[in-house]
Length: 246
Figure (cartoon, helix red, strand yellow):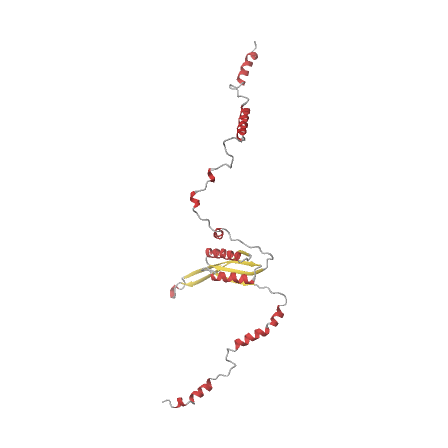
């Protein structure tokens, strides 16, 4: 017997698995699942059909007593809404100035929200170049004159532009901002108004009424009138009562 004939059965024994897995495992699972689905589809089954109830979908008892905030209050926690301009014609440039950046940003947000509710397309705020002012003053006098102190003031600016806005709406917007002005905020507005063709003819037709208004205002000035003070004084001096006064 040769060596290869002896080692061949040993190799075959080692190459075989010790425990042979059953070949019908998958078939058993498929058959079990099919039987379960058939049992669920029977009309006489005791299980009622319906949406599955999840534990996470149960309402939280702490949230039942909470009141939902209105939409207008929820909008305060979001970015301000904006209107879209149809033609893009500028009607107002509002420049805001302040020495404090938080106050300036707060009032810019307030102005944008007010413009949205007045149906005004607002753009901005656009940061403008800051204004830096410096002063040098002496700290004392006489021999301490060379001791000086420097002061600096930085002015921050923002620009908000209104486009395609009605003149009356723009005036209401500016009046609202002026009424609810924030401390430390300065405002400067440039307003443009557009009129129809033939404005000169309309002004000529209104000239007579304007002239009457001017004449009515000029009547209160006494330059062209003859003062009656001299005659009044002569009348008092010539009176009988003034003569017999001791």
